[in-house]
Amino acid sequence: MSDALKDADPLPITLLTGFLGSGKTTVLNHLVRTLPRTAILMNEFGEVALDHQLLQKMDGPLALLSGGCVCCTISGSLSPTLKNLWMARQKGDIPPFERVIIETTGVADPAPVLDNLLHDNWIRARFRLDGVVTTVDALFGMGQLDEHFEAVKQVAVADKLLLTKTDLVPAGTVAALRERLATLNPAADIVTVTQGEIDPAAIQTLGLWNADTRLLEVARWLKPQRYQPAHAGALGGRPATALHDARIQAFSVVLDTPLDRYGLQSALSMLTSFRAENLLRFKAMVNLAGETQPVVLHGVQHVLYPEVKLDAWPDDDHRSRFVFIVRDLDPAFVAKLLADFSGAAQHPAGAAP
Image (tube, rainbow, N blue to C red; front, top):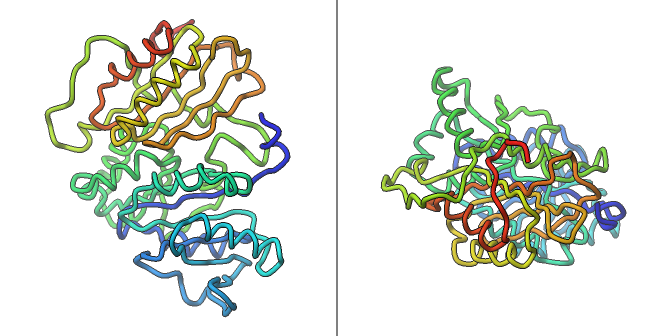
């Protein structure tokens, strides 16, 4: 792992998203009570306020919450808000929070928030995105996924899915929704939440970096075995149906031979520059020609995370492994683009090298 990760230990940020009425703020109210030393950032257009009984008077644009938490409203850009929080923490004006939760509005696209976090160098030096948590309403979730692509996108970019209001619907409905969510986002674990009550550990350590063990956990983060393999065969074209689910594809690509760095960069640049709306999320661990250590890549739409070089391969399989969630983008096209530009051979996912 890089020295920056070892020494700086930037504060983890959790992005809490979910469609209107799906229970984000109910979950947040519970987390405020059970997860001390947390800074809560709420979008200024948030539809529900935090429980007023949790609020204590405090000078300035911040509110002190029970349990040593701090709450503030995002006004304008996210970066100045995080900078102000950090400076207040450093000066001792607010409790020394250890993590941040950002709650978005119900119709928010997570990508711009991620862009803000990743491309501000000052922020990146002090904070790191731990993961995206999305609440899904068991009562209205099916209809929201049918009618609103924003709801589908929030599910697709999630690292953890919180299924709310399951006590209000039949078990068969819950099972069908779980199956649908697992198809849209195979890697995201699904946790049932009742009345907003959730173990805080369920929303922590969702990213590549585990602050407790001080290790990079690639297998847990990538989960390639949950995706269907795609191959660079005949292109099938865009699905004709207008249903959101039919337009979403979750798949893996495995490349046998070491990849040309610049060719791979060109392929990913084409996807993030010209097909950003189609590329909902991808993760990868790649074997680059001339490098003895693997490199981890990650992107959401047009946002490419900084690459992370691992100390060593986690196992004996040194093939490059990609997982994608896309919309209206043929998996065979993506697989062929990667293979052609990087000069790599393909091998069926899961087979021996």
